[in-house]
Each structure stands twice: as C-alpha cells, then as structure tokens.
Length: 186
Ligand SMILES: C[S@@+](CC[C@H](N)C(=O)[O-])C[C@H]1O[C@@H](n2cnc3c(N)ncnc32)[C@H](O)[C@@H]1O
Image (cartoon, rainbow, N blue to C red; front, side):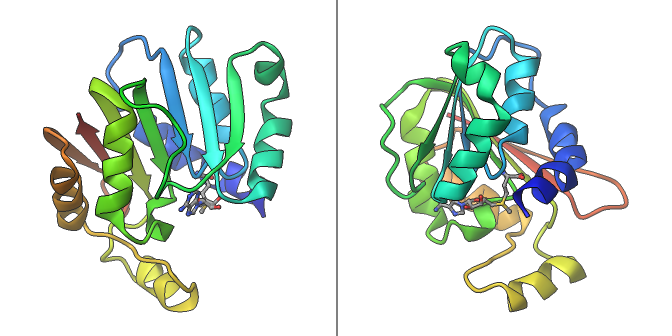
C-alpha cells in the first residue's frame, strides 16, 4: 500500500511542488511522509537541503528510511515517528514544511497548523497538496468509507491557516481535476 501511494501520488505531488518559489530550501520537514517518495523528491530538487520526514506510523517511517537510505547515510535525511498534533521539533527552524495527501487525517486542523507555524522560520512556507478539494465525488465517497477522514475545501484550509497565524495564503487549482495546492507563509 505504501509503495502504491509512492507511485500513485507522485504526479500530483510534483504538480504541487511546481508552485514553490525558486529559492534554496535549506531545512525541510515532510509531515505524514507515508512511503517517503516525496521526501526523496524534495532532497533531489533541493541539493543543499536537509530534511526530516515524519509519520505516526512506524511502518511508514521504516519504508521512508528504506526509500531514502542513501540520503540518510549522507546525513541529509532523518525519518522519525511523531504526531503532527505535538511535533517534537524545535521552534523557528524550517524553511519549508510539506504535507501531501495527509491533512485529511489530522483532525484538529488549527492545532496542527499552529504546530507547523511554530517550527517554521519567519517567512517560511507550508505547502499542502491534496487530490480532493472537499467537493468532488471521489473525495466525499472516501470520507464516508474511511473513519476520521475529512476532505477540506479551499475556504476551510485558508481559514485554518489564518487562524494558526500564517500571514499570507495562496491557492492553486488544476484545471479538470479537484487537485488543490495551498501555500501558507509564516
Ligand atoms: C494518504 S497517506 C500520504 C502519504 C504521503 N504523504 C504521500 O503523499 O504518498 C497519509 C499519511 O499521513 C500519515 N498521518 C496521518 N495523520 C497523521 C498525524 N496526525 N501525524 C503524523 N502522520 C500522520 C499517515 O500515517 C499516512 O502515512
């Protein structure tokens, strides 16, 4: 399943990543990292970066370690188990925090987004990338089947980011698909 997510989410994740400004991303955290593919892609795109990949599933952490073995050996990547509600990561540290296909499961969005805001440096970016914009048929169907899942609309994500302290929020949509990329700046 984790291997399937790595392959299945790659196209959408790369679309989301295309909205990042062309700057050096030194310290990155990928939250809800799943199988670790997107962590690997970020490390490839930002050759000077160091990245922490975090997931509350031990299996995801193991898979991320295996996927990014070389980068871990090179000292550029660390995969840790943790919950986005209480990040054991220091304040004002990251230039970029990413969340691909994961905020659906975070529950208390404002609380989790406040944690993201806390670990970002001033001016740092939070990238959220979702296949569902909270209005599409497929997303709403999964919501009913998967316990604890919630597909958020653009407005709900914007509101939660502003409430968490992000100073600006920008949204991108993919034509013909319900994909949504949201960029919040601390
Ligand atoms: C659908 S998968 C997406 C994985 C990966 N980001 C991708 O795009 O392929 C969602 C991931 O978020 C993780 N997750 C969900 N809630 C979490 C939380 N509160 N803290 C940390 N990880 C969480 C899950 O364990 C799972 O690996």
